[in-house]
Length: 79
Image (cartoon, rainbow, N blue to C red; front, side, top):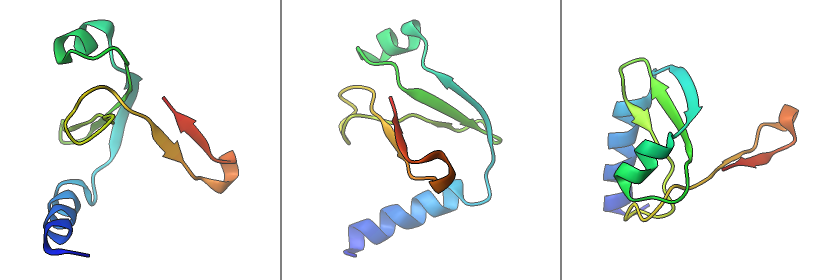
């Protein structure tokens, strides 16, 4: 892992470790329009009011997908 990856990993760990997901929903059409997106991805709200929103790429060009690998669910992609 290079230095930049380590720095980003530490920022994510500090922001997310111990947090709880309190709401899961799809982005509204208005929110997607406000962000200039066509896709409406899943939005997760954490207990500290942080929103997690999957993006197509690191430039935020559109909403993205999440792949779930939970064995009991057989693995699937949420878009």
